[in-house]
Image (cartoon, rainbow, N blue to C red; front, side, top):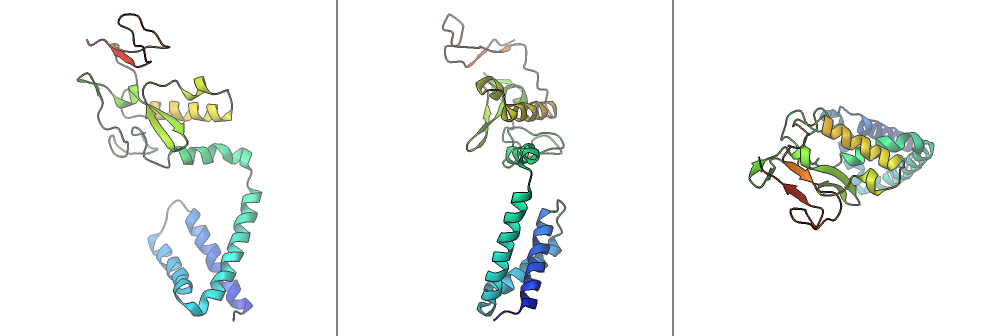
Length: 197
């Protein structure tokens, strides 16, 4: 049996936990205390009724908060969070990494034995599964109709390239063929053609 005082305490604990979760700088000791309180309710069958009550209160609180959220204003920030939720193609200074080769998937790139900066030939591209690192694909704003989506993708792609630790300019000998051409010396499958120095 739960008293209203216990439900009130559970709500306060839940709200404190949610506030702590939202903070960027997390204090590990604070979370240990919050998790300890939650585990006490989870592991003690005598307190399950109180836990059920606080979970339903928490769900209501979350639903009300989501309804208050202005999705038009939040769209770009949510998109940016999704953009960086997994490892980036290459390191982005002060966004994903503090030094080169820290978090990026691509550590070293070479084309026909010649070193090429990864950020000069690879471009992040959003897919249903996350960000894909492409080198032979048109940019999103060339494939999709102009919209907020393409504007944000273009902005994030340009920002990532401009803040890369490497030079993002393609070497002069590295050319990307546009379209499907099949004449001599041209690529028939929209791949890169290399003319070494």
